[in-house]
Image (cartoon, rainbow, N blue to C red; front, side, top):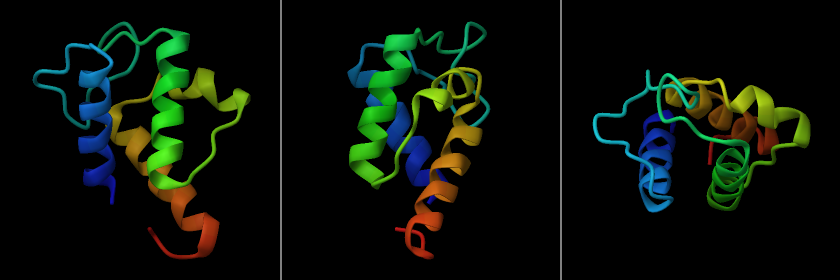
Length: 88
């Protein structure tokens, strides 16, 4: 599932007009990578919530902003698994 989340996230960022050429699981969301601002993090979280049925709280937003794509994908997979005991 993590690879699917990475691919979905990269495509979402591309649709949000971020330069993600060469992005992979090690690419960071913060200034050293994609450089998402707080609004972009919130939009990305909403897209992922809709696609994977997971929920992010306000307290998660700051933490998400400093993750790598791979860390984010693992977090989404973990949240999805904890919802019903099986990865969606």
